[in-house]
Image (cartoon, rainbow, N blue to C red; front, side, top):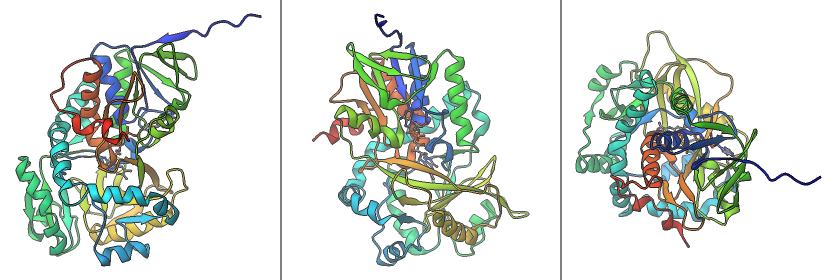
Length: 422
Ligand SMILES: Cc1cc2nc3c(=O)[nH]c(=O)nc-3n(C[C@H](O)[C@H](O)[C@H](O)COP(=O)(O)OP(=O)(O)OC[C@H]3O[C@@H](n4cnc5c(N)ncnc54)[C@H](O)[C@@H]3O)c2cc1C
């Protein structure tokens, strides 16, 4: 019997990964008139984009630094800190990465980060709302900003760098003492807090539902969604072929938007990017009787966030440096819950096990957005770290415009994949 030649469904572009980044990229490409297949091994928005704190941050001009204070370091070392937890083997493996990360998040490097990220932060909320209105997701969005709380004057003073760049880039904020905080968020318990109210930022009550609505919009407008394993991508006939669950597809252009899994595909193509993973957990709690929150609150000294969501108060943790695929460490959420209870009266837990997700991080805390320098037709949009929910819609639009050959309103040089070319 003669073998039949494989039949491919042809597209202009396939987008691999249906988190907030991939779904936004696919929706924009489709709206620019391209024939798009969006592929995920699972449901859209099921990973990091599902479980985050839902903050859309227009502020945030300093990267998350590595703690350097002896007291904080000791507490991390003794596994008593909710800011960061670790698996020793992972930390040893990541030492060169951590050194690069430290250099890029301290000293003069902060200015580079601030200047590079500022144009995206300025567009982030507007781009979210544009997609939200057209996909009927706007009911999940909330005004009112978010609150950074500080338990000591020392930690508040350290935030001056954030406030300095906010002034440089014209982002409004209010410094608050305990009495003003109590008026804004009467549910918070500690008497001697300081806070910064970032009024211009936004948040959502259900990040997973937002991605789901964007995805529904893509499908309803005529985009194609397929289940498939991106690791099967192959170069053929001057383009790229992927065998999906129900059909094989071909496209001359492929967008890698696989978040923490991006290197699973890129490594096989000979591409090398220093992508690491910062894991984080969430758990929902009922507030104790009479207590409520109107906006996300982040406890800077303890690294957690409390976000009012459709499912209860969502407690999200700080950073865990552990293997992406290692089992969850329940101590992280236990320790974080103890610290969070000092700040807000958490009641009954609304789920048995915590959710665990992976933030995809590059050492300079900036995503890679642009054409692969090595493989023709491959485009990259990953590494959004702590900001992927914020930046997914705007980076999706900017990359889609680039692929469609339009001139970009933002200079994307600072996000170029070339910066990691060795
Ligand atoms: C605890 C926590 C709190 C956070 N809080 C915030 C916040 O408040 N604001 C903010 O802006 N950001 C926040 N983030 C960061 C944000 O969630 C991420 O940066 C963002 O979701 C990354 O989006 P993504 O689309 O790149 O990746 P993901 O959402 O992880 O999507 C990747 C997709 O790739 C798919 N995939 C993986 N492998 C394959 C394969 N082999 N084949 C096919 N598909 C595959 C997955 O199924 C998944 O759908 C937080 C993250 C965490 C963990």
